[in-house]
Image (cartoon, rainbow, N blue to C red; front, side, top):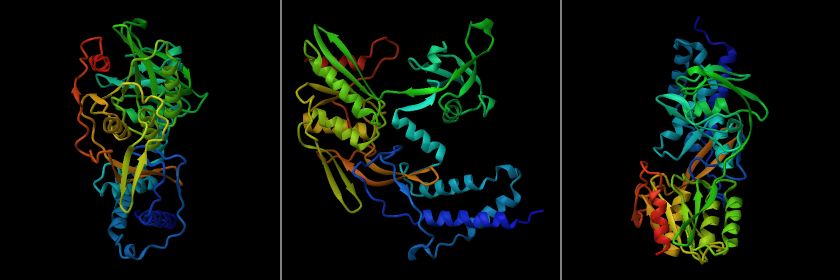
Length: 416
C-alpha cells in the first residue's frame, strides 16, 4: 500500500534538482533601483535556471535526510490530499531563507508575490474595501471612495460573513486578512457576492450584496491644507514609495507652487509608511534638498553614494517631517536625508529602524526572492537598524479627540 509510483519518484527528483539549483543562484546583480523589504524592482528580474551543475562547494551537501523526511511524509501522513509537492518545495525554500536569521531575506510564493506587486503598483482589481476585524469577525474597515463597494452602499463596520463567486462559496470564519484579500479580489468584470450583517438593519438579518470587481487605485500621496492665524501650511501625506509616488508627488508639488497666497510651509507626513522603492525616496528627498548625499549604500564589496538629483522645487519652503514607529526603510531614508541636509525637525515618535537593502527578484514560476545585499547609511553616517531615528519633538495623537495633535504641533513648529 505504501509503494511509490515511478511518476512520484520522478517528480521528487525534479523538485530536488530545483532545490539544488536555487541553492546555487548567487552573485545577484545590484540594480541602480535598489529595493527594500517586501517590494519589487522595476523592471522585475527573472532568474533563469540554466542547468543543474553545482559549484564545487555545494557538491558535498547531503540531501539524504531531506528525502528521508519527504518519503516518510508521503508514506505516512494521515491526510494524503495535503501532500502537495509544490507547497512542500515552497516550504523548503522558505526554511532555507529563514535559516539565515534575517527577517528581510525571504521567499514569497506566487500568490504573496502577486499581492506585494499590486500593493506597490497602487492598483488592483477588487471591490474597494479596507478589511479588519470586529470581535474576531471579518469586517469592513472602510469602503474606498468611488469603489464598487461604496457605490453599492457598503458601510464601515459591516460584518462580512460569507463570500461567493465562481470559485468559492465559503463562510469567512477563521480567515486571515491575506486570505480574505485573496478571495475578495479577482479579475476585472467578475462578480462576487458578499453576505453582510449590519446592526439594526434589515431586521438584524444578514443580507447579500453582489459587486462587479473593477480597478481600485489607492494613491500613495495626497495633500490637504492646514489654516492657522491667517497662514496656510501644506500637509502632504505619503503612505508608501510605490510605482505611482513620483507622478503623484509631481502633481502635489505643482499644486503647492500654484497657491495664492503662497504656502507658508510644508508638513511631510510619513507615519506608518513602510517604505518601498529606493528611487522614490531619492526623488522625493531631492525635491526638498538642492544638493548633498541622500543615502549611502554599503554592500558586500562596494559602496555607493546617492546624491540629490537637483530638482529641489520645494527647497525654499520651511518643512517638518512627521514620523512614528511605523515609518520604515525608504521613509526613514527620506526623513534622515531631510534632517541631515536641511535640518528639518522630526515630529512624532521614533521610527522603526530598518537600515538594510533588499534585491527583490521574481522567479520564473511567479514566486519572489528578496535578498539582503547591503546596509544603508544616513548622510551623517548613522546606521539605524534596531534603533530607528529619534524625533526632535515627541508627540502622540490622542485618539479620544477629533483633532490630530501631531499635525497641530507640526503646524505650530512651521509657523514659529
